[in-house]
Amino acid sequence: MESFWKNLPKPFFGLAPLADVTDPAFRRLVSEYGKPDVMWTEFVSADGLYHTREKKGMKDEENPLFRDFGYTEGERPIVAQIFSSTPEMIEYASELAAKLGFDGVDINMGCPDKSIEKQGAGAAMIKTPELVAPIVEAARRGAARGKEGGLPISIKTRIGYNQEIMDTWLPVVLAAKPDALTVHLRTRKEMSLVDAHWELMARAVQLRNEHSPETIILGNGDVKDLADARAKAEATGADGIMLGRAVFGNPWLFTERASETISPRERVEALQKLTTYFSDLRPAKSAHLLKKHFKSFITGWPEASKLRSKLMDAPSLEALNEILSEELTLL
Image 1 (tube, rainbow, N blue to C red):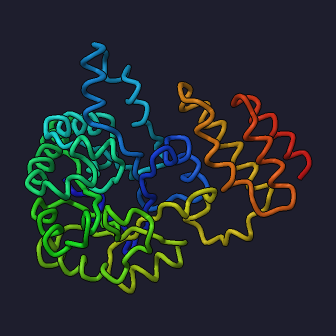
Image 2 (image 1 turned 60 degrees about the vertical axis):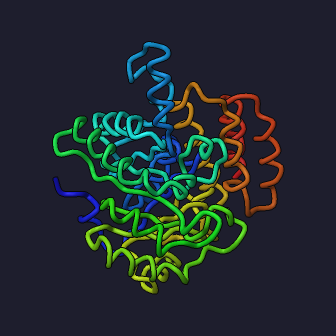
Image 3 (image 1 turned 180 degrees about the horizontal axis):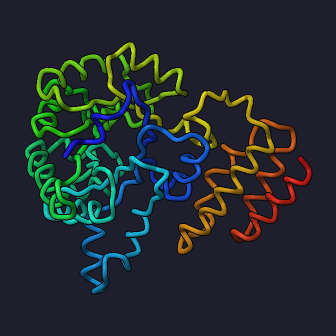
């Protein structure tokens, strides 16, 4: 099986997995306004997928976490990101991702969330390097059971836990021969409190060349827009760049449009479309999850703050739609 990673342009640009942001509704919106070269789902707990099904005796498609694995054809190539420190759980979730038609599986070895780290997953994996190979092997086994030929397996991680240890950590990750590796250029301890260390990305590329030259490598952290992404790829030799927080309120991120050229009406229309998609694709989720989008979408014109206040007070998705529709008649 040929990995889709090999067919991407170089450099290529991807949408990062962002918890409670890059859900099926938001990804659908981004794919329509300006599709990136590759997209990731939000991370999903492999343990949660397995144990919820077992505990409740339900089919996979009845699992509430299963909905987080939803996607549309317009998002391809779409990679399912999962986390666990248990190979058996990773194997199960990878098989499920393959059966669901995803284009790849990504293993999160960088998330700093404390509840995830307590499970030995996410960034905690940096402290247990002996688990990397068994986890990747389990993902390959599961994907191969779910689809003939399997799926490409990728990893997203950081440059270290308490301090930068790329020269010892990345060779361990690369020894597992992932199809792709995304390096977030901060340590776990640094969180997002310091600027990403892009001066280290060329070294990460060199380590890839030495230990697993077939692995596609991406850089991630503080990328402002496509122009910035191109410059960082050229300066470091990275195959691709992952953009994350820059997409807040900006489904146009992967186009050439400058944010200052986007009109208030376009912003309101995009938010209304997101609300509609959220209602259609995440009916069991509370409308309050949309609130994080209000400030980023509704900004840049004199009456924006008043509109944001109205939206924050809206009690339901229906009320949100009514407020946005009324605003469109005024713009």
